[in-house]
Image 1 (cartoon, rainbow, N blue to C red):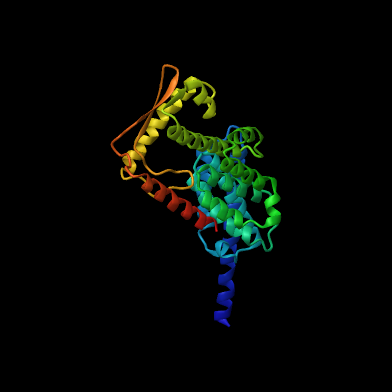
Image 2 (tube, one colour):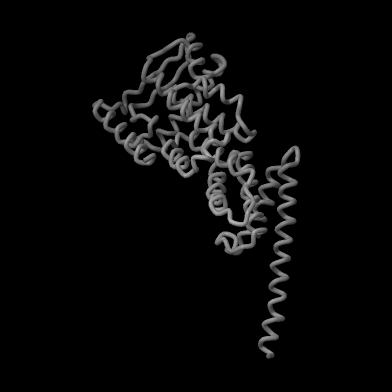
Amino acid sequence: VGRRALRTTGSAPKGCRAQAMGDKAKSLFDSFKAAFTAEPCDLVKCEDLLGQLKLLLFSGSAVLSGTGTSQEQLLVRETLEHACFLSIRKHDLPAFERHVSQLKMFYDRQQGLPPSEQKYPILGLSLLNLLASDRIGEFHTELELIPVDEAENMYIKQPVQLERYVMEGNYAKVLEAQKDVPKMYYAFLMEKLIECVRHKVGASLERSYENLPAQQAAQMLILKDVPALQEFAVKENERKARGENDDPMGDLTPSLTRRAPVGLVKWEVKDGRLHFIRSEQKRLELPAVDLMVNTIGYATDLERIV
């Protein structure tokens, strides 16, 4: 009897501690949400509060294993959703991808939880991030995991339509869609997609021209004027130089849009024209190698999609 009484009295403090921890987490979440919605938003403060909240929520494995209460799981889900939007505000895409990966567990397992209003905006942002990163194989893999009836949601249809425009080379439609994004967090990723499109167009120009009128090049690269083209050319040269230093041997497994290395091509705006100055040091001698490398890249992406 004494031992039974001891167990009974010992269980009360444990329950009280759990309740106190839950109340603390709820209070901390309210503070984090208030800081997140404040104008102007203090991103450093939000990040600090989010770190404290995640440490408190994830200190035990009950929520992540699915054995936590509905209130606990709902709190974690809302925390991760706000963390996704905070990552976009901070332009921290690796953190965004980590939070989306954690959220999918709650979206796939919704027993006892009300539907989330943020599910489709976040999944749409995830698709747009993959598209803007030129990860087409992963884009289609994620799209296949979305049920057909949910694919008609406006937040899912937007990146799907954009992917179609990119594959068609209809870049004017991509630029037009930038004015009609469904949520404010899409603006950053749309800018990233436009930048990706510019690199695609630039790669095509390098292959097609020795030089061309600067104004025409600016229009083709979706730039407003020649000074913007000059600025882009400087950044493009810097990007290529970094790529040469980071990977001096070149990437021999290109994606659908990445071509085989043919030497460094320097951009120069001079006398009203954009010139492509080619380096002869690393030029591939055999066109067959170029064809083989691109074919391998296509097969790799197709395998991911299928």
